[in-house]
Length: 283
Image 1 (spheres, rainbow, N blue to C red):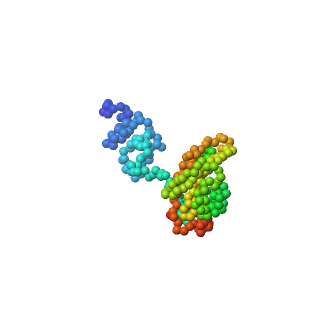
Image 2 (cartoon, helix red, strand yellow; image 1 turned 30 degrees about the vertical axis):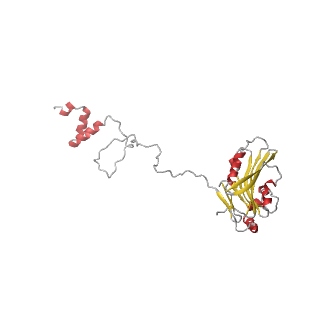
Image 3 (cartoon, one colour; image 1 turned 90 degrees about the vertical axis):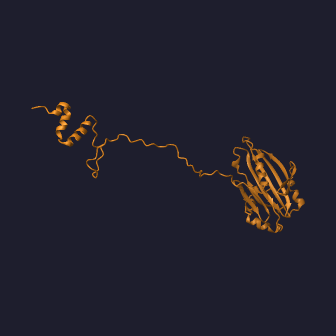
């Protein structure tokens, strides 16, 4: 018997594979099986199970060992639209206005405001006496201590009071009422209103005070303003605060003062203003 023709041209392994499956389908299966004979056999647990709904004749593809790389832009996405976060604006000043007494001023929003009722119940926050029991403390604004950390800054304030019982001569003498020699008396013109002022320094035992007082007589009333800086440094370890910068803040409030003519004298309305506290009001 003669040797089959395919045994003369192909290796023995192929001959065995060809003898198993006859016909046209044998050629396809033999080619596929033999081409993968030298490759590593993939475990059944690693092979994805064929969906029953898929055709059985679907071509079998090798399992990918690594996933395809997906390009990722690691840089943050920047919007071309204007930023939603707007630059913070400087806080607006708050307006204090007393319609009864025709006086107003502005002060920074961060400062503390004390009305007439609060000042009246705290003896340490009352303004310096003007020599008359009819003096009325109307408002007080204080600079927060946090503005000057690790310094000898103790307090800085702007105070407004008035006295409807003083005449013009008595009113203009108020800056000298403390009896402490002043650094001098000066005049100040604000929005067409003349103010007479003085400055007094005092201190000792690690404490000091710088007080400026301004007065003006109008609407048959004496308007009194007190700007003060007090320091405390008993152990001598604290850094000295820049006194001029503190006083400049208080002078800025003083520069916003406006006194308007009133239809009537303020004397009959003193009791009502004290009762309501005289807090900030809008015009």
